[in-house]
Length: 327
Image 1: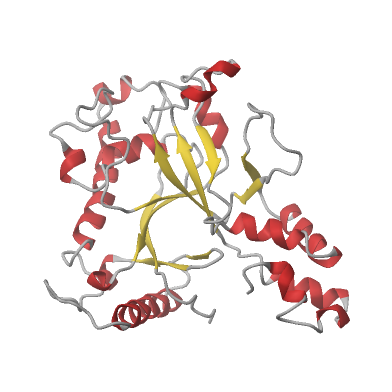
Image 2: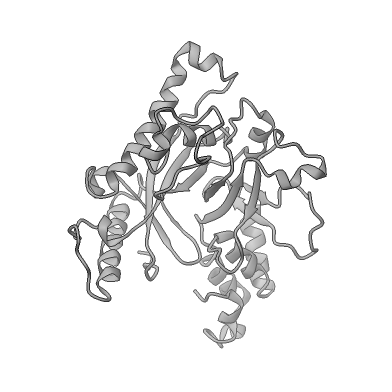
């Protein structure tokens, strides 16, 4: 698919205008990236908005990525809707037949241009990935936030070697893990558990992992790959994960955005103690352990009526390589 959907009718497919409306609609239907991946910033304490009458204890804020770098599926769908009448009709039918929710802008706190983008996500099928900014405040301390994200069933965070919501050098907010777990682990299971309390209808949570040659089980310590070897190794590993996901398509999920294909993986296909996978699967275990603590009466009573979701915890992978064809 072309980077700009509108250009497909002018450069990539000059005979598009001769097609009947039904065939045009089918073309755009296959280009809607469903189930898709969307990226947003999750800002738990956006003090810049306090002058507009909103206190930092009322809401968490969601902002979109810059258009030039955003690969989210919602931007592709918005671009398709502007191509022609057939494309616009296809997008409207898609939105009408799904459980759509507006995630950005959520609140008109500032004067916005009339043509500002609106981000709609399919709550039942799409995967919504957040990058956390600022503090994480649990919903039992800020209940208004929980109503903002109702309906969203699939949520993700990127797995990177950096802490979530760490205030350096000393964490002043009480939800941070003890014993400096934020330094010891790339992601903190307790902070992720607190973040997920914002999603009352959560059914699935994933860590998104961008593959590297060192995740492929083929790169020894100190190894320096030849030019072009890295991409070949990563592409081959991603293809193996894709094939495994297709063999178990009833259990493992697949998603896509403007540039990447995402495939759910399991421990048996990645290995538990190889490279980063040890930290990745350990983080998944930590989240479940945090949720299990709510079975302790003294622990749960301090957190109001919040009940952890019975959500599936998993990992999806993608790579900076040519998008693999659908099979």
